[in-house]
Image: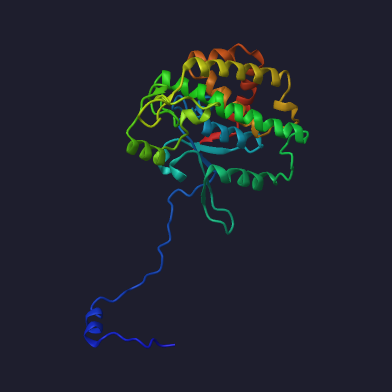
Length: 302
């Protein structure tokens, strides 16, 4: 149906001097097409090409390395020459999958990695997620909270004290000084990691007191509170593992094992006194060494 409205003749003559041309899309060709699934990670401790230096120093990246390896996948490439800003949502890791059949190459965020792994290993329709019963599945949630809470705070503390970069660390002291409100808003909006305060339970007190005329802001995190809770957490983790092959007595590795390995490995190689709590537990050290061999064997340098 033709439009009942028409442009004035002078305007039509003027617009005819600027015709709109459309062109077909230009196909993107790669000189080096992707051959293997490639995981983008934060750099290892030493930038070399041997398997002993193929594990990321970032606990989040290492968690997904362990998850992929413990699900049984091998021959997965890793690269660490891409900054976090190049990843999805400005964070690493990301999984770059090659084209297969009618499906093109994709870049997957961490939340999409389990689905991709399920497709490669045949899927896992286990409502218990690998645990023996519903009780152990519920218990696994408590251990995940412990690792991502108290243990994570201790790990960030270790990175802060030796001035190593960490996604959750802004290289400030643990008793964070108040920042201007606007800078806090911008930092919250752009920061990729979690603030140290939100990993602790109960939350730390603010720097400004309740009787202050200023609004409460800033956090006052004491090292003693972190260290005490961290020591209890590692002792509980060691006791729960005992002599089992996998945590919670599972027959096969679960997501909890991948998470526990990531934290234990980063703590053991933190070059800080924080590692002592782990080295005192022989079963944790032996378990980390055994799982590390399995995880390293699953990856190659891209």
